[in-house]
Image (cartoon, rainbow, N blue to C red):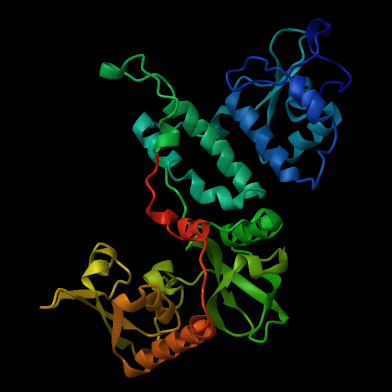
Length: 392
C-alpha cells in the first residue's frame, strides 16, 4: 500500500467522488461529517456498504485519499476498511509513479442488470414499504439500491419518448402504507434479526411471555415478514419446540450466535400466513365460519381475498354470505366488529357469542353518556365528518 500521508498528485486535495466519477462538492461533508466517527451511534457496516458502492461505481479504481474524502475518514481508516472487504483487491498506479488506485477485480464486480424505466418505476413504487426500517443498516442498503433505480428511471427515454425525462413519476406512482410502525428505535434489533434470517444463525433475545414479563428465548429465525405494516419474525422457539410469529418491537437484547441452524426442507412461509387473520400454522381441525354482510359492505369483501379458503354466495335479499374454514378464530371477532351492524355471524355459535359479548362491552362504555345530555360543538362535528370532504 502507498504511504497514508501521501495526498493526490500535484498537491490537490482529494474531493469525494460522485456516481459518475467526477469530484463532488465536499463543503457540506466537511461541515457536517468531520473525519472520524460520525455523531450518534457508529455503525461500521454503513461505511463498508458505502465503500463497496464506491468501488463498484469506479471499476478503474480509487485512491486512498479519494476513499478517505468520500467516507470522511482518515487514510489510515481507509486502509483498514479495504482490508476488511471480502475481495482480493487489486492496487496499481494509473500511470508510472502515480498513486495506487484500488479496485475490485473484474471477475468479482456485480453483473449489470438490464432494466427498463417502467420496471425501475414499478420497484420504486414499493420503496415506502421499507420506510419503517429507517435507522437500520438494512435500510441503508435498500436506500443505495433506490438511488440506482432512480438513476435508471430518470434517464431520458428512447423511441417516441426520446429526450423525455420525467423526474416526478416516482412520486406520483407509489404505494402508500396504511399505518406503518416506526422502528427508528429498533434499528439494531432489525439488523440482528435480518442477519439471523439471511445467514441462518441462531438468535438470543428476551421477549414477553403470556404474563407480559420478558423471558429469555433461543430462536431459529426462519423468516422476517412485513405484515399489516409491522415487522414479524417467524422463528422456531427452540425451548418450546414450536414455530411462532414474534413482533420485532417486542424483542429485546437480541444477539446473533456464531453457529448456524438448518432450515427445514418442508418449511414454507405460505403455510403460516392466514390472509387477514394473522400468522400461524393451520394445524388441527378447521371450523366453518359463516358471516352475512349487508349490501353496503358486500363489494368491499367481494373484491378482496381475505383468506385462501373463502367462498362467496349472493343471498336473495342482496346480502353477501362469506364462508371461511379456520383453525384459529382469535383475530376474526375484531375483523367482524369493524363492519359494525353491517355484518352478522351465522356460525359457529361460539363466535356469534364472542362477538355479542364484545358489542355489549362496547355499549356499556357509552351507557352513562347516553343517559346524560350530550352537547356537540360545530367544530367537533366537522372533525368527525372530515372523512367525507373532497380533496382539493
